[in-house]
Length: 236
Ligand code: DX5
Ligand code: ZN
Image: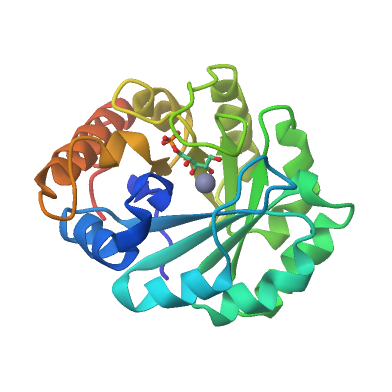
């Protein structure tokens, strides 16, 4: 994975057909997404359950690009190796998931993956400051994690700007997760985000049998975001 700050659209397969993950991953990539975002939930850290490392391993061969695994689980550390073995390129853990996030980030890199740090809406940007040498990505949650299709929390845009200033020249992505659509994408892109996760706004209107709406939805989000961060942001 090489680093750049161009806008990247990462559809969340939380909004895909759960009986058809392989074909859904292939469809969104064929329709122009950049990364595939995989939401792992445990019914404990968040009030919803999705799937674990076996599903990640099963879908890996259907993803040509980056598999971006977002762990909404606690504890995290006992499962890091399994998600790395499943082929995750990026493993993101929550700052709120345990008392030793520094150790968790070390373990993620130790397992050979890029390390992401996710911040819930109630967690300040300052939480990331002592961890910047340990992370490849900071994920700003713009909804409370657990479900797709929630409303974007506008107060998080200021947090994105704070993180962008804090990160400076470091090769760290700022990812936005929750409620991203063509209306909200420009707000976070202008504030400095480069990876936009979107579930419902990408998958709406399409299916593996009719994937063209996925492409139109991805383009609409990308175009809105790129327009907000100025010309030249389009290079992949
Ligand atoms: C929320 C998940 C998100 C979510 C995004 O807990 O981490 O990835 O599914 O879905 P939308 O785009 O529908 O808010
Ligand atoms: Zn997510």
